[in-house]
Image (cartoon, rainbow, N blue to C red; front, top):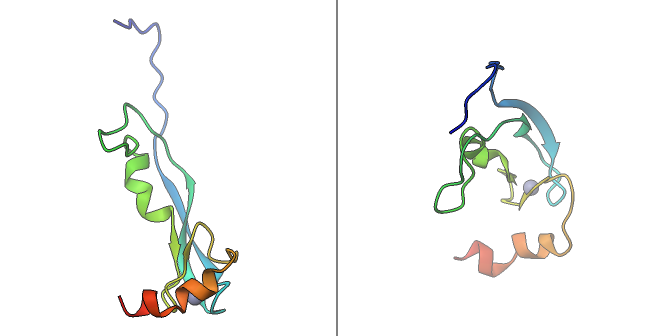
Amino acid sequence: MITPIKATTYALMTITFEIEKRCAVCGKVSKQIALMSTNAIGYSDLDMRPPEMERSTINTWIQICPSCGYRALDISELIEKSSEAVNSDFINNS
Ligand SMILES: [Zn+2]
């Protein structure tokens, strides 16, 4: 059992910015959400998702180009052979 000596409350919040990114595959600019800060208090879930509030930021971890479908941590950076994957028949016909 933990007996607190002094309790201090900080403003616990997730901060995101809306930013514009130019896709490295198709060159189109789109709005993306950049995660600036968050927190995690408690244990991970049984499926290994982090505790809240970080859990609610999962939608910001991967950027998706709405024009061509390219997905990456940062769509302005080209991952080797990603252009071939985005434009492949396998991706576009499945
Ligand atoms: Zn794109």
